[in-house]
Image (cartoon, rainbow, N blue to C red; front, top):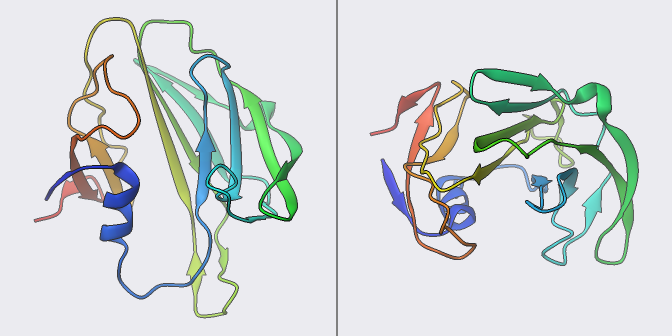
Amino acid sequence: MFLHGNLMAAARALLAIPRPATPGLMAHLPEAGGVLTLALGDPLGGGVVLDLPPPGAVVHLHGARRTDLIPGLTADLLQGAGNAARAWRTRVDLSAPGLHRIHAEAPVRRDPEGRGLVQHTAGCFVLRGAGTASPEPLGLAVEILPDLLSPGFLPGMRFSARVLAQGRALT
């Protein structure tokens, strides 16, 4: 399956099936700052935030290197729309050229409406240098991967992506 357009719109379209009404896991990584913030909700979009328990996994992938970011996480208070909740922050070294990929997983828990178990994941891609890159799948339950990342890619631009389940393309 190929999707064109905004990654968030693609994710919403993919997840348009009935599901628990829980906020998603946000991974915010400004390229200039190198400080990763993980939050449950949408504080950047003006939404509320919920307390995020310590994440189950946070890794930085760069080339063949895989760095566990859990030991460097610190709890922080993040302001949402009319509320504040616990989030997590850590520094990420983005100085080396090439594709940097951050993958985070929140712990499995019951959704607020009690209809089942949910686990949120989030990912960030940062491309350093003048080259292009195609991210490799991690084999997760569901992944949306851009076909090609280039240095000229900016928020709001159209792109082509693959939707994968367990590392295989959905058809």
